[in-house]
Amino acid sequence: SIFLGIFLAFLAIEGLYDFVLKIPFRENWNWKLLAPYLILYYAGNYGFVVMVWKTSLMRGVIMLSLVIIQIIINIITHT
Image (cartoon, rainbow, N blue to C red):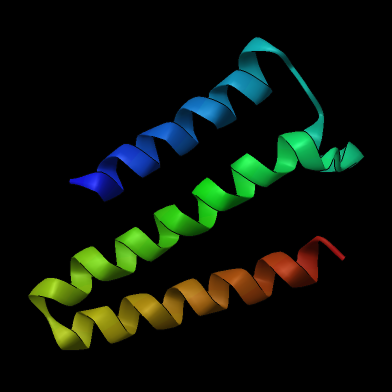
């Protein structure tokens, strides 16, 4: 599915930035590097919610609430 491709692209960019190029893009906030990472990150999270939501409404709601909690914690820890 397309969401698997998005998630694999996210993992590829993260691996490239972190392990191959060793770019500290999380600390320096270069938007040219950070924008594709964040777009794929949030698209991947959306994909996880949609894939679960297709099979079960209750599990989809649980997954959506976990993603919202994750985003809130990310905002708190990165500010």
